[in-house]
Length: 214
Image (cartoon, rainbow, N blue to C red; front, side, top):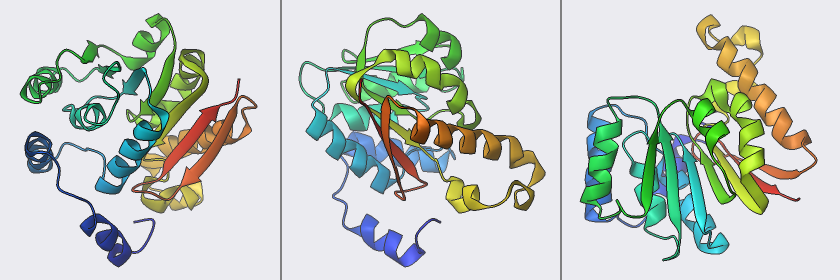
């Protein structure tokens, strides 16, 4: 927990209810222990999309489709979402959830390894949400930079790893050290890439908000 639990619970208590379909998908994800974005992170996403009014959204990491549906509820009528997922068991579930939500015409799921899919994509996206394997963010960044148009927004979730990222690598369980090192490398890259203006926010499990300057 990045901020104290009482504060987090209070913030979450202020959130309005999800639509029935989204609430059902959230409940199923919790039941099946599928990680989805936290309520406060979802609120930030929705606010940013309403401000940005994007035309093409790219999501790296679909899971069961929860966050894609959440974004689709507030995006402009002429906007589409492309989302990438490689875990075979979750792909049909996500597609079924898109149909349940009536969003199958505006959310397009590409099945495959994100690194390979990102390299194959063409054109620009003006809003990118990174929520895949945390240790791979740094490897995805060159393709993401190529695909993000100037003025576009990049949101990266789970950046602070429940606060563990501030610990020395020796204070982290050995099996988590690779992710710890790569996430620190990714944060450094975001803050020191001239083409990006990046803020690190203690929302949810940590979020970075990056804007491509040119």
